[in-house]
Amino acid sequence: MIGRATLEPPARGYQYPDWVWNALGGYSPAIDPTVFAAARTIGLTFIDLMTKPAVLTAAKAEFRERSGGGIGGKGWVPPLLGKNFKAPIHYRWPEYVTTPRGREWWIPVGA
Image (cartoon, rainbow, N blue to C red; front, side, top):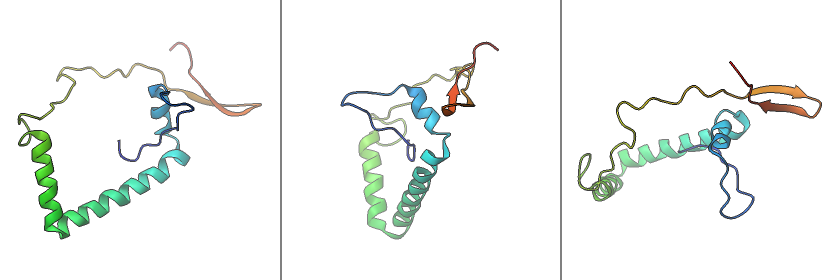
């Protein structure tokens, strides 16, 4: 979830459909700035963890607290999808077309 562009909702409580969030993941003007900001943040976090022992100790303590002792511990949340889960990859991707109004997308019908 780090570095993914999202749209600001037009009203409190409004939630865009999931496809909007996924579509923004492939739109360079929306995703590039967030990816670069996330990369800087993650990189600097790693430097802090390697150079500041107190920060690493605090991070380990927070992990143990949140997970109930680590992977498999009392508070650990296992993956929510089963091992035999089949990914829904049969959906059509939008295609981009140029119209008199400009560049738009549409979802083609059929195979």
